Image (tube, rainbow, N blue to C red):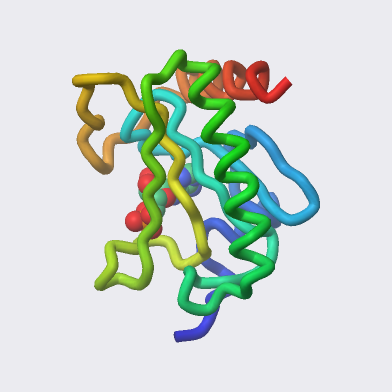
Length: 138
Ligand code: AMP
């Protein structure tokens, strides 16, 4: 399996398609999931190419996980969450749909289930949730 440089997240990294960016550093980018399973659902990706954990380098994993943890704290604060769910899928058989390594970070509340999959988020709500997370990041 090889990395396709025209996958949708590579296009987001190159600003060829729009996204709601929340945070970035030298090695990672965070943006809102366009079909959020919970308010505040973000995706964390490396800026360098990797399909998933099966071809990622230890350095890519380490930098991405540091950002996953940072966003875990931020979404908890921003949404007064009781917990955080981290999801990550590898290859089609593992549930992956976009083939650039990414981690889902979802703030969770006790006894509140996830939203149904594949439902487009409201753009104003996504923007407002991004602003809340940015405020929590300080
Ligand atoms: P998966 O590869 O199974 O983790 O699923 C890909 C995820 O990317 C899904 O949660 C989609 O809602 C999300 N997604 C797909 N296209 C975009 C996009 N253009 N901007 C933000 N999120 C996206």
